[in-house]
Image 1 (cartoon, rainbow, N blue to C red):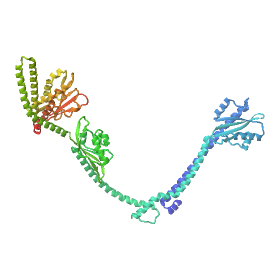
Image 2: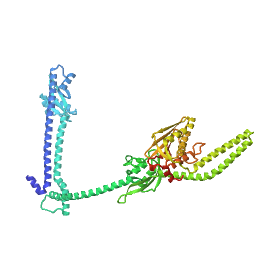
Image 3: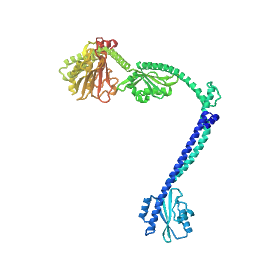
Image 4: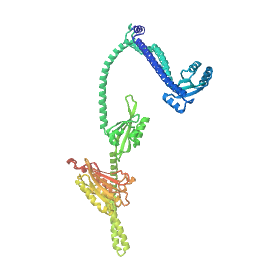
Amino acid sequence: MPILKYMRTRTGKYEAEIRLALVLIVGLLLILNISTTYMLYRVKTQLTVELDQRLASSLTMSARQLTTGSNRGLDRDQYGYIRHETSTADLELMSVGPASSDSTAASIINTFANRPGYPDIDRESIKQLLAGRQLYRFGKSNESRFGLQLIQTSPGERILIVARTDGWIVGKIGATARTALYLASGIVILIAILMITLPRYILRPFRHLRETAISAGRLTVSGTSDEVAEVIKSYDSIIEELKRNETELARLYQESSNRARRLERINDYILKSIGSGVVNIDLTGKIIGFNRAAADILGRSDQDVLDRHYLAAFPNEMEMNLMITAGLERGDTAGPREIEIDDGRGRRRWLGVESSLIYDDRDLVVGVALLIADLTEMKKLQSELEANHQLAALGEMTGGLAHQLRNSLAAISGFCQLLQRKVSHEPALDDIAGCIRAEASSSASMVNRFLSFARPLSLMEDTLDLTQVCAECRDKSLIEANRKSVTVETEFISKTASIGGDALLLKEALGNVIDNAVQAVEVGGRVIVRLDTHRDHAEISVIDDGPGIPESLREKIFTPFVSSKPSGTGLGLALARKIINLHGGSIAFDPVSGRGAVCRISLRLLTSPESSSPVAAAQSGKNL
């Protein structure tokens, strides 16, 4: 094309093509606008013809009714019929007297001039009406089309018929056609301006790229004016080089990713394997790390903790939350602290918790880490050690004191016996001496019990069936239970449970626990002795529906001389724990809300010849 070739020589290949494209767009818009305007005017003309046909029918029918009827007007039915048949909006009749043509024309002009919305009527149009022709005009607002006809109804009297129909759609189409024409003209002017300025702005980045490529030595200046082609050719070579570099970078990235994944897996293995719990929190407070040990210690699963805010994950661990908050807000760390929590399974745990800040490779703080250790067993051992120390001190004190007391009580009992012989003829003194002797005997029995509690126990180890031990202890408690109308039942979930131990001592320990339960329940109460076995130990549960253990006694229920009964000595449960610990087992009361109490005794099962002597193993590690 000659025009394109001329433009290329003046501006360059791509700039010329852009301008030519804009010229084509202008041409297409002009054609489209002209076609649209033409179609709109055609539609307007057609609609105007249809409106005039309706008006002509209305005028003709009205004139026929007026000239053939006996009256000088149209009744209501005739109005309705004509409007319905011709689809006109309104129909009016105006009487015009037998005046001259000039006066008639002036009267008609004044009539329409004073009524808004009606068409402009000039004298030339009035002449056409007086000549008997029909006249059609748009109103001043172009919303209605009017038809007018003047007819002679009787000698000396004429009537002007005015028919109106809605013509707003015709006016809208005409306005739309004009708007489209004006809009297209404005767009053409705008595109013409863009055709001059736009190519320069479009090609400005290419020129900048060309200058950059020249300054970087990637492009040599040639005589051609096709700057875009030069830039594209230069950057094609750069892209090829980048592709080669991309392949090498992908290989290096893959190697580093594999190394990072291996390190991440090793880190995960370490976190999962260590016995201490680890909880990692980012700067937003979201938990991003939670190892297996932490899940076991805190009684939470990964789904309950990971990706949640620490306040929502640990709503009841206030001390832990305060340590995390101090690290996130102030950068403070805390050394090992002992806190007590509920593990979610109804049991209290003692934890050792310390916090530290997490730093990235730029020494910026990115989070807080908690290191958690379970101190529950250590606390139990400490409690047992303290109890053992108390028992040892009690034994030393009781060993010396009890001998003195027994001698004194024996002397009191002897003197009372002699006194009874001397005063046998005086019943009052004889009764007093008998009471003193009975109290001395009761005190001697109490001293003997203190001595049996304080002295070291010696075991007669044998293989025992716990079902038989539980049944015998239940039978022994029936005398007191029947007296109070208390039901004592046994539930053997496991039919056999063999352990190694001393039958007499175990019966005494379990009997003390059952007796306490029977004494605690009210008349008509119930006590259940349940036996179950797990993987390596048997569990005896003594369950009652009594008033439960007072909160003030929960922590010292196994302490000697602590009892909730007015006549109790507080040695039954202490002796029971001493015997159970001697057998390598454990005894504890479950925390129960409301009424009732549950005492659990755990003893190691005999599973192999090597493990047939748990008592000896316990004795070697305990000094009771």
